Image (tube, rainbow, N blue to C red; front, side):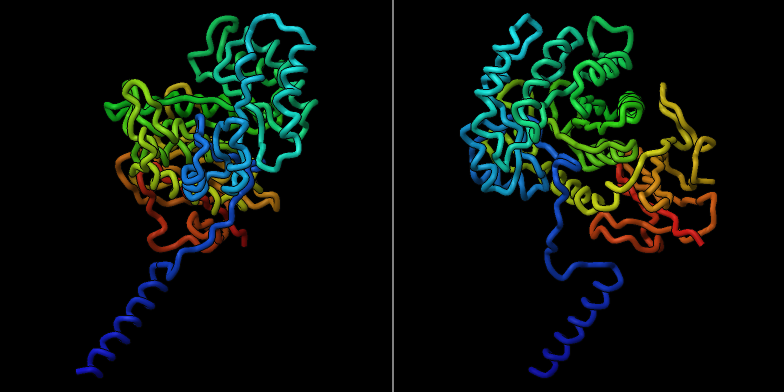
Length: 410
């Protein structure tokens, strides 16, 4: 009996080994190298409590920034292995669109930055969320004062979404372009929540990405996207498909930063289903965010070497958006029964890359890609970061999922 049990154990172990080799199962939890926030910030948008466990969980969830932090909690952020955006009352409570003297701005900025200008956990300082253009003159002065006082820190400003730019401009494009040229933050960040509780996804998801890509390319700066990660008002409950669609669409358009609104559920209204609820307990959304964030870290070493050169949709081009298969630089055909977004890139070494995204947030799809030039199609694995041949079951995309493919030319 003992020998029979031993043989069964050996056979079982061999079967697990064979299955692991065939399907890529991991025998143990991997260490995922983290990309730096200076290269690609991943932010739990909102105010973060000075709680050691909460900060440790933010790091575990795959973030490289800790959100907005009170000055007295910055050291705790460093202990958690993160960086942060300091929410200092001398700045955040004083920035306005009303007249203010340069000396007063300099005094307040010095008060906020003097204790932190050499702190390794400080990524930036919070200035303003969702300004209209009448704020731009003062924001430019505050931004310049922060840069002068702490050149290594970023003054944090985030813009309104398309259609909500407010008075003083004739178009959203003007709103974005004037921010870049008049405020000069060196990057452009915005929020836009397009997933509704009736299951619909507004095409302005892609229109806003298109505009941000256009103006970030025009001015040679990165753009960041704040995506919907909780339910409130009439917005949809977070799902893996909806979150993946928002993140991988941002990557397909060449985005260089992701924030999630919000990581902590606000103590108001009908906010719910954030990654951490009002009692600081993790929800199922937390696990979804961790999986997506770790994919970003795995793709990062390759993705960060790519230059966005084109974007198209196939077969359905969303209202207001440009680019169908006929505009593609690298792709002859995208087959399968799905509806796809394709971002096209050139690697630093000249190789063509594409990010193919399944735009359906509820249904998986198989697909095929035919490059215009001959060669071997490769994929960058979002779970290992390795680039290898594209074959077998890798031709499936989960709802909202993106896949990074490239061509190894003959």
